[in-house]
Image (cartoon, rainbow, N blue to C red):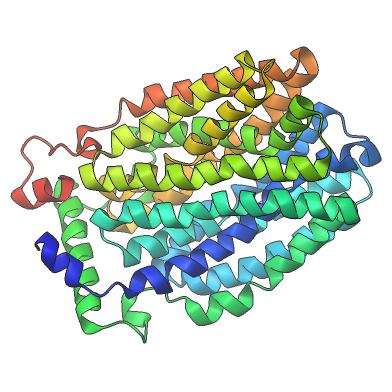
Length: 436
């Protein structure tokens, strides 16, 4: 299909599918990261948390997060992602609200773990929905618009949490933002459809375009991977473990940075929490910009390897420069904004890779495995920053994150040539077209 023909296809999928996925994850991400503001706003003192324990409380979310990753991806691929996500919204909204009533460090750990369980299946389920609605040449941008929710969530979370802290306390942060989650049901259920054929609003031209393109992609992958592929076989594939390790290193950097950013800014600027809240939003404006630029370049070139690797190395460099210039407050802050530009820029491109490497029967489960094990980096990042900060100061924690990001970059360079836009030797004409 020519470029002109593609441009004439109705684009209702962009307006009906992307907005509700963004809204759901904006509030989900807000509920998982607002603990950073609660810690900086006095929770650590009231509950008697050391820096190491605060890092543990921030990171234990991701231990619970593993539980529903693979089931969530499989349920979404074989059943209804719409219904599955609706139930998880009720679960995590309730738990997030109840976190505002904890009275001990132990209770906090339990609630953070349960919040991780409740949210765990949402990410792979939404990625499955996007894969059902957007062909490969659109998927990088579709993923980017969805993942832009993280930037928006942080832009909102900073000022909102800072404002709540000025009129209430850290408990109010959890209660108010948890109740916002429960309100999502009124938006999610009427707006979302699992697949194009389930949507009442879709035109015949758009339906035929999506289903035709997806069928071509699925057949190309099946031809390359002769014979059935099970989840057991998947786990013996070297590429799945490369993707897991890359994502692990990436998430270590992302969540180490995100959960400790309010504390870093407070230490850097010596400002009050209201001002810190507003300052913390600025790096995430850069995140929105970085997401779109890298995803658009990735879709245009189809070089998934390059546009996964560049943000990882850029993030690491900006982290290091923010430490080396900390005596110049606003120069250091500028590099923290640079971290924001690269913070999520690899994600939309990274998540286009599993459908190129694995058949549709296991792609949903593959996303779940990658997200489950890779997100253990979300546990390690906050914990390692807290631990190294306790031992040797904030600089040591930042250096630790940079090392993991550099390792993720080096692993990205080892991915197969097919994800760099180059056809595999001996590929059919249809496969070559898919990879270009």
